[in-house]
Length: 456
Image 1 (cartoon, rainbow, N blue to C red):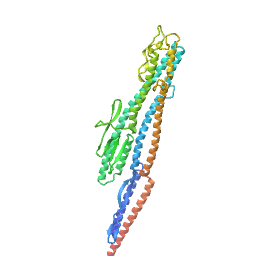
Image 2: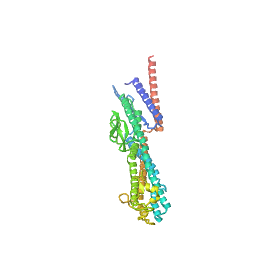
Image 3: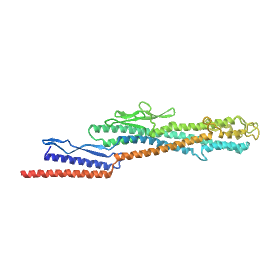
Image 4: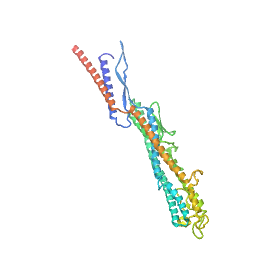
């Protein structure tokens, strides 16, 4: 439409477009400090030209959309890094507690207790009839047994304390999955009405980011932007609905199940995956290694001790030194605890004979562990080293994942972050455009007044 009305219409559209630009700029600046906010940009396009008698005449500017600045690929990378970081952080914290409980190397750790126990038989061999040395054997055995009990109890307690943590993480996942589904419904409703869903998209992405810290999520999007959340092959959320999870214990293993179907959901990473691995695998393995160590000490010591003779007339024989079968039950036998004279130091009962005491002391250097390849102390030292290596591996993984996450967040901020300096430049640009359009309207108004004055 040519003529003054056409000029006025173009100016009006320009005024409205620049006004929207100012409003979007204001929205960006207002949310410059809002966590998870993605800056928005007005996409201006040339309005369709109008066919006139002399050809096509431009009709000004139009707003194509208000676009959220976000990169799905980078978001996916951040979510992947989140669940790897969550797993490493949780495991590192728990393993650090286990390492602290071991208290190695120290004079009060299990390693020192085992050494002191076998050394007490070496000391007894120097004077097999000495009651003080016999009491020292009992005391060193008691200290070792108590340390075994303490370590087993610590692992057992830690395993139990982690159960509420698992339940808490499952509850958080359920809340977030439901929230993602609700956000999807909001987004679909807005888009169906032709409205922009930028803020709702931000909210959904923030919920997915929080979810990715808890579990190994995979996020899929269809051509309409609707999400499907998959964890370990199980669909937790889609446009058709969502499922609720629960934690259940079966056969000593904690499983995450679909609350409706009781089908297992494989959560192998994230904070929840890290805790599950510690509870279901790491702690049971550590308990098993301690049990194996205690069981070997019990059986090896008893096998030699049974053949020896204590003190008395006649000297006692055939007594076990230890009772129990593992780290939680190892104890001094009733015969020895009631009378230190029942400790067998002699091989034949004759006064001064120390052959059994020496054989018991020599167990410290016997290859009785790991299929005859390690001594008892070497096996325990390997166990301590394994815990230390696991702590270091978790620490290294946490540091590397943090570095990756920082780099990805910097890339994300370069796209999605709000720069107030840049927004101020945009504001000046829109203001100048608004002022220019207003001047056009003023000029058209003057032209109308001139025409009216001519008629008058």
